[in-house]
Length: 210
Image 1: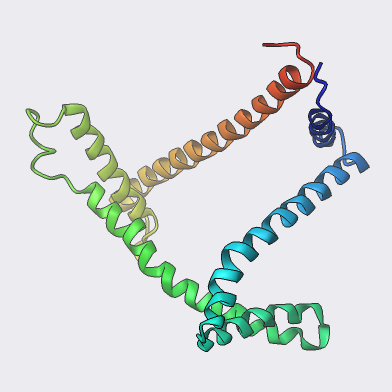
Image 2: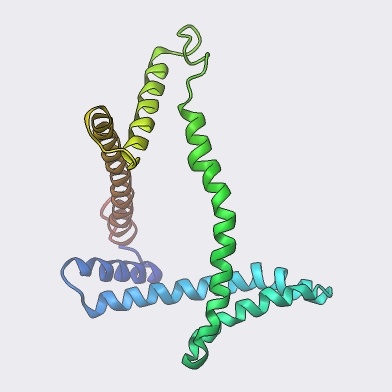
């Protein structure tokens, strides 16, 4: 078994988290609150050193006083702590949502729409078996059909009957396959974390495996 006290602390906290599999209990809550507190304690000095000092304090020392505007907006978030003045926090929230939407919209169009259209177009090179393997051509055709069928499924201006309904049902299959693949990837990632914790307990803590 390990003689490192920090390994024992980590093992104890890991078992506290696993205890939630039985039911909610004080051990799980202690580990949960400790994780949140440690995360905040770790993040705050990083934000101070990497954001506040180089982007606020240092520029203000160089007489860049226009930064007082975003600084005041940021300080208005603290108005949430005072019920009578909590409405002031709506100003920075509205500003953040507005600027965030304005920045995210063209990026989303570029990444989710234009790139998707580009990826589903069959070029001459893709249709030449001597240059591109046939399996790639088949894959592009399947991708193209899936994009068209999915878009038709979400096109509600026409009633989904006859040919449109059949194509929409194909789109449903593509959507379900995408959801299944995403869920499988998520489960696989969680299982990987679980294996890592068991490996820590059995190897680093108990020394039962090598």
